[in-house]
Length: 317
Image 1 (cartoon, helix red, strand yellow):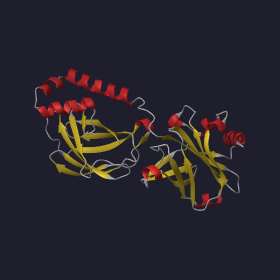
Image 2: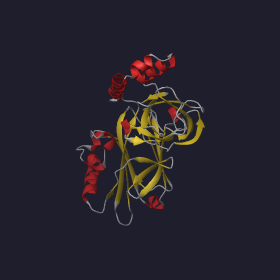
Image 3: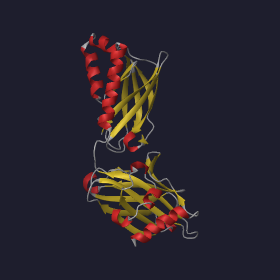
Image 4: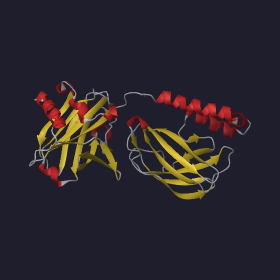
């Protein structure tokens, strides 16, 4: 049966009547959505035994029972037989794995960890699978049009459990070296050692990349979270404090915030923005949310009459 499915995948690539999506699950207005060509469905994953009612878009924190749920946004999906497959990611493409990479796998049976035969499900499609081990996987969803026979398919690479630090230690070390080299060459290091103890603490925080401090050539940015420490899938606010490298508050600045998870090749699930200038170099940032654990970057661009600069805050949740 599995080899027949492999032939079907190759046929999907060859036939012009087939529409292949690039795949993946995306954030749309803070809701996880899977796109199967023009067909869309709300997509969420639960791990009830380890995470209760917490919802995940793709990556899962542990190898455990996992419930995949699709709530149709297009009524057409109610009339289409849908099948669902999970394979170990042996493509070597990671987050960039697509259907053509899956079709190139010689023995799909050997890498399949779960498969549910095509069937029609009204309103909500639900499958459950218990992962026996952590690692990188690819989910494959396909739906066949009952009249035209066209098959619409999507893939979504995802990770189960924390499988390693990857290149982050090297990247952080390089960023620290670049920052320290700049401070030495610009003479700021010498000036900072001549200043008060708080300035020395800021320098130490920059070298260690503690999450509450970010340094650049012109600005020092610190933040606090009045709603408590950031939690997964909880909207919260930040208070940004911006100073010059001489310790003077930066007032009346225009601040834009972006970011994401570079290791997972996606941005923030929301669009945080500064909603209030509190004075004294303080700015209220609303709409911050992180939807999965891991390494995040908050990219903060600051503009005033004297300078424009971007600083990066690193977080691990």
